[in-house]
Image (cartoon, rainbow, N blue to C red):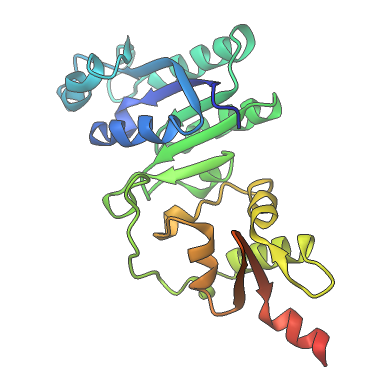
Length: 238
């Protein structure tokens, strides 16, 4: 992406941790400049105090939305309306949604359909349907901070059949005649199909992620990493 991609940030303050705002903005700075910064909620609610304390520091515009009916807030609708206005009236390249609420899935899908990159941030409880609707989604839980990933003990990544199939398909799609695939194109192929990010599994680099899975062979030539599906290469050698 270009260094100065224009980004619109929409925060569902009711469903996002204020303590992670520095991590969110630091991650977005890798893509471009956050021109629009808005956070939505009923600011008379004491639960949003942590957000109130960081709004001015990070130049985030609070958007007040009163609860129209007791027990039911209208924050979601207000955020969607503003996001659609920005989508059609502003020169924006990336739409970012900070929420763990899957109600925003149609919004993310619509933004992608209009050619926008959609970056999502949320907690581990975020439903897969919203995670998968984003171009890229990063979890904000303490063990998976996007700026300070840690090599945590993974829950046997190999047991995730869907993920393994995704990785194998990506390698096969760009491999050469010797069944070696350049890691860069493999990563691009994966990103074109899913919101996958290796940092959600505790790895800073895609090369480290593949190296941790013994289903794949890794090698490096100069500055370029290559990956090979061991099973596929073995079958071809018979």
